[in-house]
Figure 1 (cartoon, helix red, strand yellow):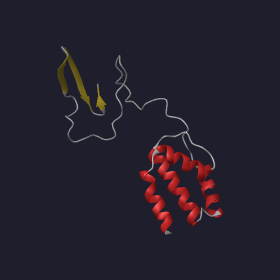
Figure 2 (cartoon, one colour):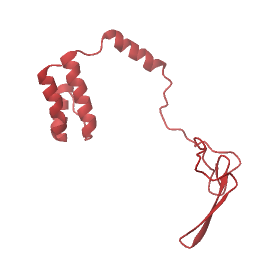
Figure 3 (cartoon, helix red, strand yellow):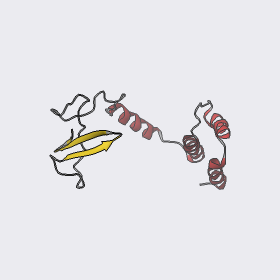
Figure 4 (spheres, one colour):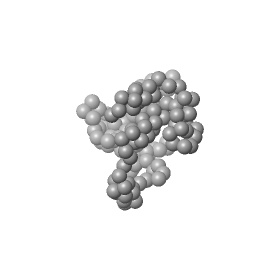
Length: 130
């Protein structure tokens, strides 16, 4: 890595967001509206290194495009949350746990607490809470 590239990369974190945005416009030829300093630093560092040491080869670009076309990407969040059937109450269903934790009380335990003058009860189920 050339010395001037190393110096410029080391200088990026010390710049303010306005200076980073100006440098982004110089290197990419277009402006950005982001104010995320960490993102700007990463993008500028990538661009500086690509200009100094060479960008991706055409073969690598084609392969990346193939992988992107074959990927089964979700474009939006799932509409429903996985739930345990048969545990629905008036307020919804219990969520599926990722795995049962050793610190949880055994299934069937009734947890009772007083909260702001109201008694709250939770029953521990085999795969969640009710």
